[in-house]
Image (cartoon, rainbow, N blue to C red; front, side, top):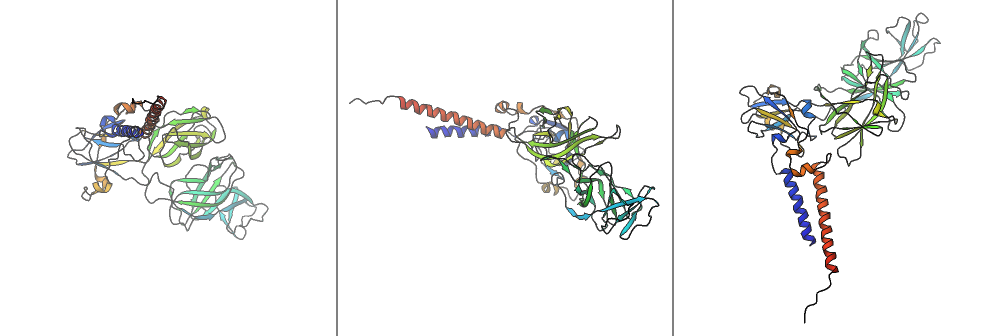
Length: 471
């Protein structure tokens, strides 16, 4: 009896698996579809997935992407130009000790003491110098100013950012300006992104990294860091983040749906599994400062995991407001995001909106059959079909991938859900539960019911009186 029940459970599981994968994916089963127009006499073509397509992917490795011809047949394709997810952090330089700047009212002591070099800045009312020997000036008129100098002349590799070490005031973002010079007299602005901050409390956000707007060549240069309006800032040393030798491709951006208030936090259901390179949180309210943490999960049954911390701010005069930069997530894939305040504040009044950034995804396909061809994206539980990039590279006859004809995309068609084309069992699956989890739960439930039936049958047999055979 028990063996028969187990055979029934196994057969049911196999039926569920067969129902999920019985048919090859059809174009109509994908949530996002767009026609493609190819140049005449094209055998190979390439196409880049737009942001709207990336926001429908149901797999972190883009396995639910297909190209169909007019007959509805899937054609061969390969992804190209994919690198490590979202520019993982690069190497750092050694630590460079900073040199503080001192000043005195112009005319009181124009000659800097021994062990100092004069620095020219845009201020005619004071004389400024730097102590290259690390000593504090003994002149009574000398005042330490909110600036430090970093000698980066020996740094040959370009830098993409600097990591600032020292002391910061609590709960107060510090805006730092940078400039670069070869002679300590003529300075050029070096635009920075972000602010330094350190919030109190366990798990509160901190930031010690300032990114350059563009890779900075600092060989044979000094860098000066200036700040104002904040007390208690002490910069003791700086590390450089080495810039990559390859220019990062432009990222694609997409707006997330409105967040749903849950307690004091905000929940966002993404609807896609595309790796997220960065997340930007924006508030329209002026003079706002919110330290937050960002959490993620892939299943409703999973606990939240912290994936990043940031400060959402909008400060300054109207028209010249400073806002927070994007938070790097380094290719995190999730189905739900949650934003919480680290100081317990209620975020529902902040009117936060969210935008995600994706690394570009591009593919080359073989124009097999007749057109029009169709790019299809977004289908759960889809097996991978992309060929290795090297397999198609051998058909280029020495041409570069960039020389392959570019297909143009037409107007896309989107559907709210692919469940209607996935079968009866998929339509019964609760929202937020993956197909794999649904199958496992279904097998477990059927197994429990069958075992309960076996137990009930055995109990009935035990209660029946024994049958005596006639002599």
